[in-house]
Length: 309
Image 1 (cartoon, rainbow, N blue to C red):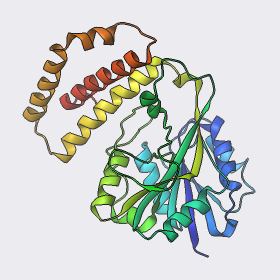
Image 2 (cartoon, rainbow, N blue to C red):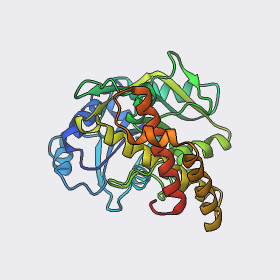
Image 3 (cartoon, rainbow, N blue to C red):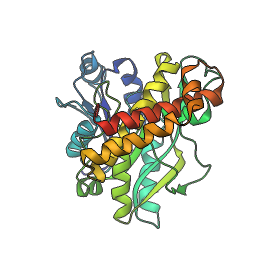
């Protein structure tokens, strides 16, 4: 029997969280014969395989695959290729879906008067330690926390869906050629923007992106992420990712990259106050947000120079 939807979890060394993510998919309100669960193990070195193949051996609509090529985009494409559903929904390996997650995704696609290319929704954090006072709402977004609207809304460019909670028609993922494997996280490399490219391609083809707060998941915030170093590193890679994307989309030659990097560096030099605030420690959420912005600029310069990415 054809499946209405495939729920895909791509996982890398998150065995401690993975079981709860899978269980939330086992507990879905949708009839078991209408959906499948696909786990893509992306070269994990922990006991991920045991968690899936032993702890959930009794789950008849679950399938397990090993993807030896490192990279989230590669793993997502593998999950899409193996899927049998009309729609493909991606859940992070450290997230927990609400009981009606898949049912609401299917309903969103099938009841919309507009052609939808992707749907997703609210993501609430599960704090393992209390949220620090220096963490502003702007920087909080780096933890994949989303709460845009209180009703279903077609997204304007300044809003986005997150890969921890997002779904697509399978045919559209295939038409777009899948996620770009040159982009996206690879192990401890935090390169991103593969979702940005997918959204641009989808909207260019005439489809819309829908945010629905009832398509709801919770997302673990591990204690090791709740520190300033993690956020600074995340913003560094955000800047690198933006530069890599521009180099790719604009086909920038080496000289053009050097000129653009030089202009960005000059702007920093001409604003010494930014650099001073970047160097000085702070627990002020406004100043820490600005420090993160400067780190993003540094990352952008690094990415233009081709030193990473």
